[in-house]
Image 1 (spheres, rainbow, N blue to C red):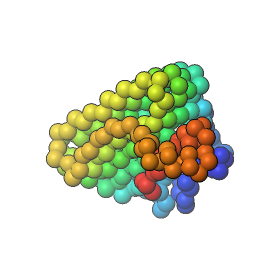
Image 2 (cartoon, rainbow, N blue to C red; image 1 turned 45 degrees about the horizontal axis):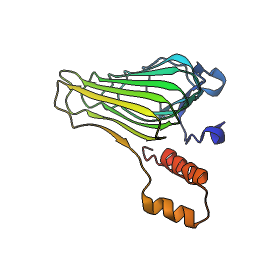
Image 3 (tube, one colour; image 1 turned 60 degrees about the vertical axis):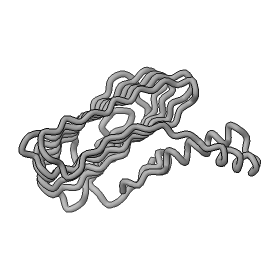
Image 4 (tube, rainbow, N blue to C red; image 1 turned 135 degrees about the horizontal axis):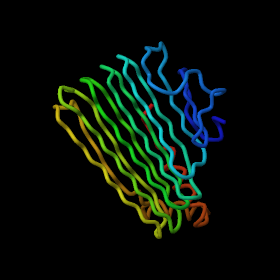
Length: 223
């Protein structure tokens, strides 16, 4: 399964979902609140094909706990994925990457809340939008009062067919001075030089697109 979805694994306590369903046979801990300090990081893995409305709740309320999130999903019918993150654990940090391959209509909503000082939530989201698709990507980062020195970063990037429609809606609501607070949205395009180089190497237009897709998907540096 790990080779199928290209999920980077490492020693961790795992919570695994496939096709939107929790998999107890692949998990070492139960889903829900992370209210116990583990010796290992917690790795939440959400993979497969999804349809309709899907919700993923992540709540960290223990100090000094690193949490990683890996999402690799696709949809061939209309689908919605809501990821709700609540961090109340001082010095605890969630780092995640989300990859979505959209073949139809897809909406992704990231709602991240810092409820304690010195908390971190960093989630980088990537979208591959195919022909005649619609994608809406929303990210809300909230740093509440008396939550100083937080690190917040929700970023979106996409590579898309020329017929695809994409909406980016990143937002921040900050009531305490953060250590760092960023958000971003961008579209990836191949350069003419890259295309010409690959053509000279004998690749067809379809193969050039596939190279671009794979390069875009695998260029994560969160771990």
